[in-house]
Image (spheres, rainbow, N blue to C red):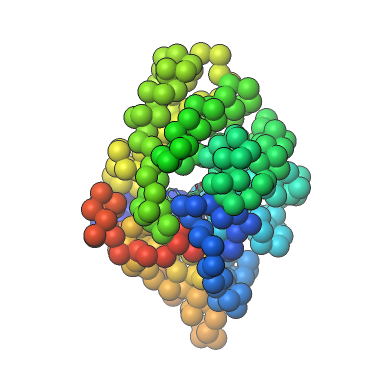
Length: 324
Ligand code: SAM
Ligand code: SF4
């Protein structure tokens, strides 16, 4: 079992498989960015090697993310490689959903356990403004196709600046489909530093005004930081991930592997340990050297993030590079 200095058990790793994306969400991916050269990006075999060492130490849940993981060729192949690692109990994916309906069957066959689909609006014009792309229909098709086939969570970053009503409109997806809709507070990372989030307490108030009183879900606390609530007549739940208004660092259980093979203990700080060099040199004992680096990253985990004091944030990279 991996335990950090503060007694937290670390059993979850998020893996960014690419810094590239087919959308340009305004809080994440500004225009005119330079992509990381492909030779610096970990190959699937390298990712699987790291995950096998992490599994040997106690990591049992993996999330594939990016950038947009489905723009990288054969993402399903990676899913099936990770699913075969002894000790890995769950492999899930976070996607913007644009390419999901085309790839869903392959991902299900590979054994994908659940999917998170990021969607901040159900209005076509607002979607185009917020993502720079007219792709809402593809995302909706993916949601309809995936719902009921595997657990689906819709993740919405609720924003100010004319988009205040989007959360209320999005919540109907949990009424009409067996999916959870979750609201995530914008974190001051990358381009997110320039935008204002809608605080989750306000989102909850607006949803209750529209659909009636919510009740806390008895199984509210799952594996992550989301708190879930139920609404009468809704198939799915409404969840809140309040990174800013409900600091949940005390329960943090994660490490992040960037697309270039850096292991990050916390989203807020630039500190990381590099694994790629170990993977690519020809010296013996790679397994143990990678394991020691994983232990080092766990030892480095800080007590808490400092998003409420932006001057203390040392991470300046984009969310898509780090692995959101
Ligand atoms: N492209 C995939 C997607 O959109 O789901 C995976 C990568 S994306 C970086 C993962 C999640 O991070 C998305 O749900 C996105 O909304 C969220 N995200 C990006 N920048 C953020 C920020 N500054 N604060 C909070 N969430 C952010
Ligand atoms: Fe792409 Fe996801 Fe970032 Fe949007 S949030 S630009 S979909 S990586």
